[in-house]
Image (cartoon, helix red, strand yellow):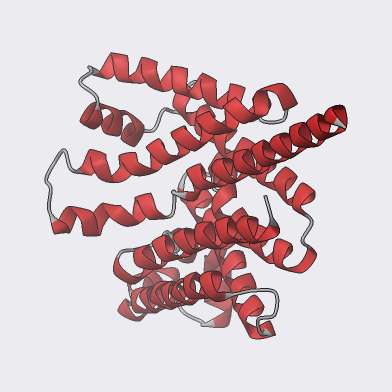
Length: 292
């Protein structure tokens, strides 16, 4: 696989991540209030800097308006990053890379805010590794063109995302998310207990895949499964919502959840295609040597 194909996959994946998050921030909401309304963390600062009580701060409509402005502004940043992700190349202006870096940092911050909002479950942060890691990988590859190291980093991103997803799906170390069960029930003709059992099996497979992608003889089939499962879990967001109603309002409400998760399937596919191409080239080289 040539560097152009690798770069194209990274650019498309980065575009999906930023465009999905841009839609969320521009039309819906993001978990920044979990930070700005954290009394334990911010009350001393609010009292000292603004000389107002915490009650006045949280009930002030200007505070909520400022958070909304911040959310929409980050949405504009993500929209710019989505466009830049497609058009950026090795010779692009420095400001493009700077905006993309700012977007990547913002995605890390967003993952931290989601983690904080989910009771500081550390696996919630690492479950988003692909989402904030892909733009970083894109910037890295534009500068260094080291395909082997890039593929290793992408494998690590995949493994972390699948391990963390599996930790939730098995429902042992962390509570099984209710939306996992709801989506399963909406799509499959099963009862709740069967849905939980299926999720447990899927969680165990997540752990196996996270290990198998680093084992040469198992990596390619494991990556194909990771591609399949990553796309399934992304598409499930929108298709499970159609259980309630098939309308533009449902698409408006749920489609962005699918869009920024599409790289969960695209990145494993990228790694698979790279490994498969290398295997074919090695086999061709060996055959040529034997025939000569």
